[in-house]
Length: 247
Ligand code: NAP
Image (tube, rainbow, N blue to C red; front, side, top):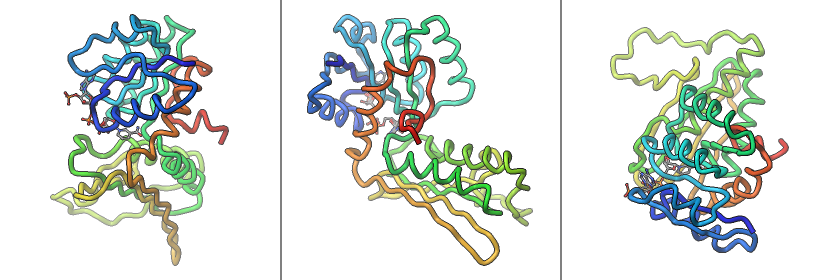
C-alpha cells in the first residue's frame, strides 16, 4: 500500500486524483491538502508520495517543501521553466533517495502524441502546434504544447533542419503565435473544450497531423496512478511520463 497526499485536493484535477487513488486497491489517500494547509501535514499523516495539482505560482515551493519533508512528488501543475526545473534537480542532490516526476500531461494519448511528434519532426519542413483548452485555464501556451514544441525543435536541430519556412514580416497582433525554440505555438481558449492538441507537419504536397483530445479529466488518472506507483523507483528529477513508459 502506498500512502498518498494530494495537494490542491479540492481543485478540478485534485478531486479526480482523490477519487482515483481511493478507488485503487494498492493506494490510499492519507492527506488531502489545499491552499491554507501546511505541507508538513502530508509527512505527519505518513504520506510517501504527494501529488500536486495546484497553481503555477505555488507548485515550485510545494515541491521544495515536499523534498524537505522527505516525500516523492508527482506533479501535474504547469508553468515550469528550465530554471525552476534546475532548482528542483539541484535540491534533489541533497536527497538522492527521492524521486520527483513533473509531467506536463498525464493523458496517455497526449504522452504518445509528444513522442510521435518528436519522431516525425526530422521528416517535415514545417511544424506548428495548436493547443485548445477550456477558458478557465490561466497559463498559455499549455505546458504540453511547450514540451511538444521543445521536443520537435530538438529533433529538428539534431537532424540539421533549417527553420520552418515563413515569409511573415508584419505581424503586429501576434497572429503567428508564440515562438518556442523556433516552433510556433497557438493557444485557443474555447468554452466546451477540456484539453486538446494538434501537431501540424508539412512538406511540399503533404500534410501530417497528430491530434489528441482529453474530453474528461478522468483521462489523466491512469497516468497519474502510473506516476504514483513508479516515482519511488525513479530517483532524481524526471520530466515527462514517457520516461516511465518504456517507449
Ligand atoms: P484548479 O481547479 O484551480 O485547482 C487548483 C487547486 O489548488 C485549487 O483548489 C486551489 O485552491 C489549490 N491551491 C492553490 N494554491 C495551493 C497551494 N499553495 N497549496 C495547495 N493547494 C493550492 O486547477 P486544475 O484545473 O485542477 O489544474 C491544476 C493544475 O494542473 C493547472 O496548472 C493545470 O494546468 C494543470 N493540469 C495538468 C494536467 C496534466 O496532465 N499534467 C492536466 C490538467 C491540468 P484555491 O482555489 O482555494 O486557490
